[in-house]
Image (cartoon, rainbow, N blue to C red; front, side, top):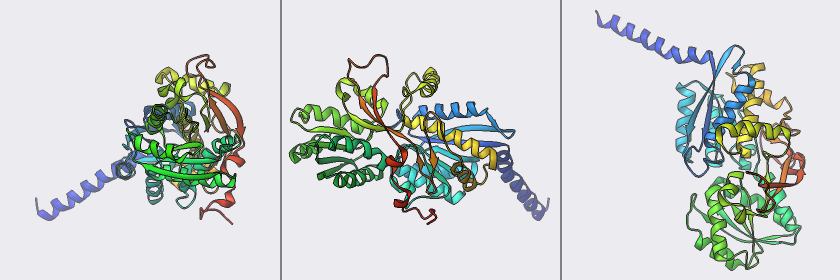
Length: 402
């Protein structure tokens, strides 16, 4: 066979092969759950996030406009470069239309840029940084759950109202920790308090002794923990060994999850004041979801996992109306529809992509107060969404129509 003919046939074959993924993609909506599957955030997201998305797809009916819905999962290992490479591959060659979760603010900030580049959708449920709806906002993602402003709002105010005016912070040295410190400092100062110092620590720190000695020496009334998961748990456990609480210093965990309390035990975590986006035992509808989730996971869902369910269902409802190939259009449709489910009471997604909804000030129960497994929180009060998240006028997102 002449060389020219062989080359032409090769080109035709490559064209056919390259068209196969695109054609296959037309017959399916593919959801990529990007989470920490094996690291320090795996309990609060991980396999539980995948299960929450599965339940949302199940409740939606399992298909959309006659097309299949498929779920794939990926472990970003808490590394933005790994997350970026994985998401690019999903969008380039695996037909993924939407990424859900993206636990960890550094990971989430990387993912939203890629979603914008490919005009796909991203549902950021597993990150806290305010940047996601400020300078890093985009028309291709929503920030669904809590941000730094809402997280510190209730917790800081509760302690300052008790006369706890001086603070020292242990800060996880990445976007999430920095955002928490900045927001907490602003809020503390606005309410007449003062941050007397802070110290940064690497992610996944096992030995907090040098950091806690600095906190102890500061004589601050409150030691704020701007970290999460095992970092936060380790800091609390070692603070007890150093006798910080016995010396009159209170611990304030800026971000604490149900799974953290379970791991630490109520004897260590009791009376901790916290802000949460939702709680499994809040009402009948949250309990109904939690019981279904528990059947598979054998634990109750964190608020990240509840957000995964709610965001996925809201996305599917929007995609049914406008399609899902245009990620920007799907996100716009999500913003047009109020959200009012067990997770997001009175919820609405603003122009900057932030879901505003009621959040809850809670206190961790003591051993004697807890009456059943996973009965860990006493909901002290409901914080209306407008109060918790602040005014859209303060957002630096260029998408906002002035």
